Length: 575
Image 1 (spheres, one colour):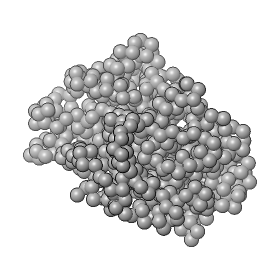
Image 2 (spheres, rainbow, N blue to C red):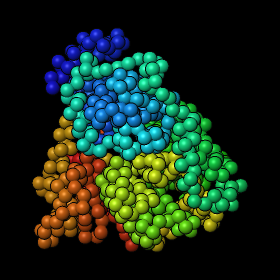
Image 3 (cartoon, rainbow, N blue to C red):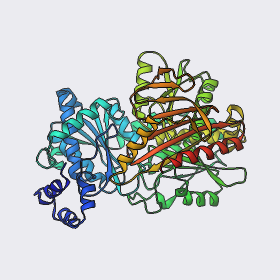
Image 4 (tube, rainbow, N blue to C red):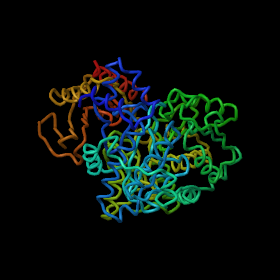
């Protein structure tokens, strides 16, 4: 694509406003900035689109939103009139322009004859997945950039099962977009006109109530909460986002008497003014929550990201200091608790299954198998877990009771097909109360699991590669690892090498090649002689290579030593 010609097309378009034209005119002498904004469109993948909010083809703005929606609308219309009548559910988060973008998407769908249900205001991502299933919609659109910094927004798309779009539909949209002119090829209908004509209807309290009824049905043990209610204090922060209403509601309905919400972060604000990053994976964002917990004497802190699909927790250690519990550790704790609680209450199916991703700790498998539950791996992303759940359950091969990935995402129940921080917050709180009723903190519980199953440890390194040559660097790194595969890592022999792109497993001792169960994702996996697993993959949403270290030791010291030595190898990949 000729980025200069595309820039001039936008600059001279009658479709843009004068303020938008001024923004583009201001970069007229900055060739690098023009190139970065116009060298090509954002890639439409299974997660939709994500980018910084600026004018340009490679950015998130109202024109890109309309264009993407026209492509999606074409795919829905191709399914026939029944699909158009089933329509689309639309949701948005707290970010700047999210409501504007959501309404723009609704206007395009309505103009294409597709019925629209749109939330009256921001809602958690899992409620959008629920709404698609609850109302029998053909598809869903969510305007969110999840846990990304404030400069970002995104366009996530869902299909009729409530899961993010399968690859074949994402590819179909990408093909449609190649045919559509971003300014002249998009149909649109004014929002109020479409609403008056019945093409757009609002969702609100009725949908909330239906969603929360399903959430609260997931409770296993109210009695343990009642038992400790007078002394059980919980601190919660939504990081200025969508969890602000429904998460506190769920915890109070559970029976939590002493719920302390961080007041500064209960304010809805897409600038996320109190944090550098609104990501519960980053413990530094919890400083206000920790201060509040110290004031009220709480031992348990929960934080959900801006679209309330991810959740992070902090607990007090033996020294009384708050420490973060990683996504891997949280999932292991919750898996062990849930499987035990369901067994105690008679709710655990005989053919129960746990799902995790290939980059999630192997400790989860140990826990599942100890409870007599099968554990299956999927590729990274809840669309793959939703797909696996559907496959297993439709064939009578298992009932999935819990799915999770290391990046703080947990899927529970049958009413959503995506990460769900509302339900996860509820059950994590129930778990914390249960352990308190046993005289234990979650820190104690985690140490007990290590002693029982082994000292597993995980570390993820993000090798950031920004700029126009970032993608080239990422591709070159992956190519080099394939062309010259390592025979040892940090002095430890590589015993097996899996390339999930072509679905092959190479035995590094014999050279024998066999087929892997999973295939079709740009991920490399190395199994080492000491039982450690290291995986390398490019991020699907950001310009970075992710390196996952999954190790274990006979004690905490050996585990930590392993993480350190393998981390040095991982970081050296960037040089």
